[in-house]
Image 1 (spheres, helix red, strand yellow):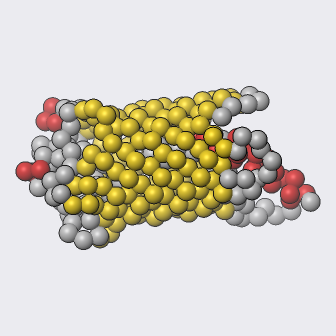
Image 2: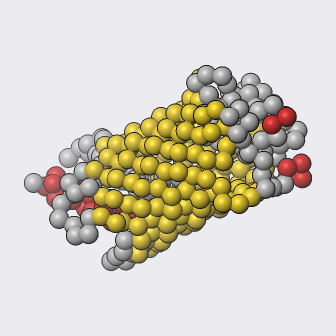
Image 3: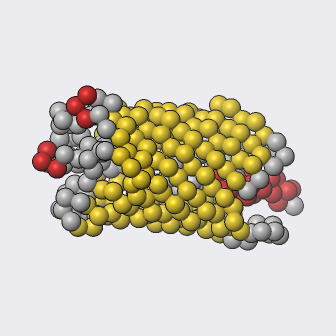
Length: 279
C-alpha cells in the first residue's frame, strides 16, 4: 500500500505535464528521476535532388538521472546520404533544469542543454548545394542552448534558443561552402484534448501539438535561414507508453535544402523506479 501511495504523485506529475511532451523539440521539464525511456523514431522524407524517399531510424535510450538532470543516447541509420540504409553514428544529449516555479494548475521551468554527435556519413556532392546541416544523423558537431516552458491548465507553450557548431564527419570533411555555425530557435504549443474528465491513470491521453522550428546559418559563405511548421498528434497509454505522428514542412526561408517535408512515427515506453531504493 505504501508503494502505491508513493507512486501516485509520480503518475500525477506525468498526467499534469502530458501536453508538454513535444514531438519535435524538448521541453524544459525532465522525465521522472530514476526512470528509463526506450524510444524508436522513424522518419520518412522525399529527397529533392534524387527524387526518392529517404528513411532514417533513430533508436534512443533516455535516463532520468535526477529530477533536474536527464540524458539521451541515440543511434542513427539511414539512406539519406548513402545508397542503402546504413549505420550513420550516434549522439548524446543532456538537459539540466535550473529553474522551476510550480503553482496549483501551472508551472514555469527553464533548462539548459548540450548535445554532441559523431557521424560517419559523406556530405552531399557540392553540386547539390545543400546548406541544411543537422546533428540527427547528417553532421558531426555540438549544440547548446536554453529552453523555457510555461504550462497553464491544459495548454503548454515552450521556446528554445541554441547555437550549433558543425564539424568534419569521420568519412568526409565539412565542405568550404557550408556554414559551420548556425543559430536554432523554436516555439512549441501543446494542448491536452482528451480525457475531458480524469478518472483513471489507465485513460488514454490525446495531445495536439504545433511547433515552429527555425534555423539561421551565420557564416558569410552560406548566410540563410528557414522556418518549418510541424503539427503532431500524440497518444499516451497507461501513463507510460506514447505514440507520436508528426508532419514537418517549410513555411518560408531561403536556405537550399535537400529535404523540405518529413513524416515521423515515434514509439516510446517509460519504465519507472528502475533502481529500487534500499529501505
